[in-house]
Image 1 (cartoon, rainbow, N blue to C red):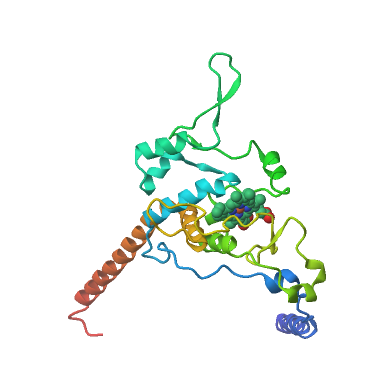
Image 2 (image 1 turned 120 degrees about the vertical axis):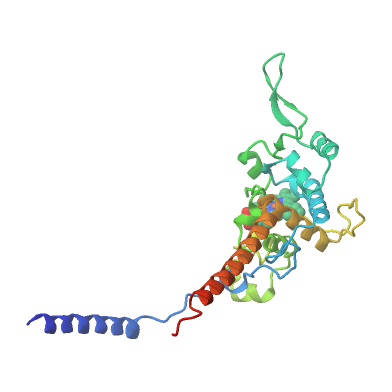
Length: 277
Ligand code: HEC
């Protein structure tokens, strides 16, 4: 008999606790900071692989590889991509062989006569060699920041290719208004203001600064914007080479489900045809 009032009291206590929490909780918003006020989401750019029907543009991927090879690879490694993978974006076997052989860093090896450590020219089966011997050397050359490996960068960052494009094209002068509101947030020496980077100040100097920095073999005009787009597309392919088959399978599955639904509906109509309901 006591169960009911006890239950009622417990409910009352619960509801009042809830009410108290709602009424007396502090509604103070977090202090605005330079980062929360000025950080920007990646820019809206269109890539051929966006959306469920998206496909890579092989020509663009080859141009993007060229930008990586001639510009980004000075600092960024791509440890999970082998030269022979480049055949997937349309390079021929002899082209891949030549690219590997001419790569600016050689791969570690062993002198067969002395057993001493040595280096040799890269082969198509090698992974793209890193520009630096190790992390210490990489940081020493980059103001103590580490240029991240690019193999999976496009999948590891929200916004993917759009993020990479935005970083590369997003450098600007620090807004005067920011400095007025947050005098302590001045970009430190050796860093560069970039509102697309999480903490607004990036250690990477602008990598693409002039139109024509690379000369494209297919005659495309190498504007900064074009090079940034092509490099971002290439990095997306590197991180997700199977994107197209994933899109294709997605479509097949949706079609299959649609057809299966139509059949199920047909069967339902058939079974209940003579029944009153
Ligand atoms: C001179 C060396 C250098 C070159 C050349 C360079 N980078 Fe960087 N990059 C860096 C460093 C160092 C960082 C790390 C920055 C930091 O942590 O503040 C970085 C970071 C980045 C980031 C941000 C990564 C993250 O963690 O979110 C992107 C995107 C990027 N680089 C793209 C490129 C592209 C694309 C190219 C070629 C067009 C390129 N970089 C060329 C040194 C370089």
